[in-house]
Image (cartoon, rainbow, N blue to C red):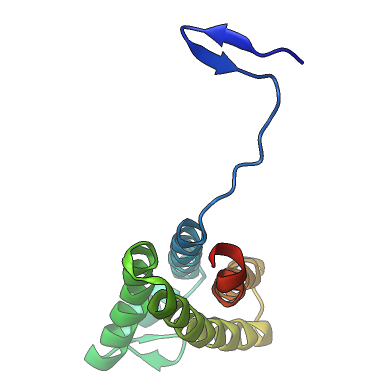
Length: 150
């Protein structure tokens, strides 16, 4: 197939498989996990009785005190920080930070997913599964990193 030229730019009719840097993959996966978690939280607010419980000071049996809100704030902030650090940290530190925090968050999301299997809502299972898969992929890409980029 002969390439065409348009304004000095060579155009081909073939799709190229562009290699994406592992740092970008990791960053996107952290953001994907965060968006799935935030979506899950918003959908959870729409479940019957949840807002009434929040007004009363608990969310599905979990008291909403300053410690709980701080835990939620930190657990929502870490993936955002990791999305940035995945792009900026140097290789070995970046790799291990992603492996360790990916395992920690996979465990947190998996335990939450298991808890939602007791009182299943389709959205909770879907979003919980997506968040766990994102974390597993983070660990997998970070683990494979030396083979990918030397």
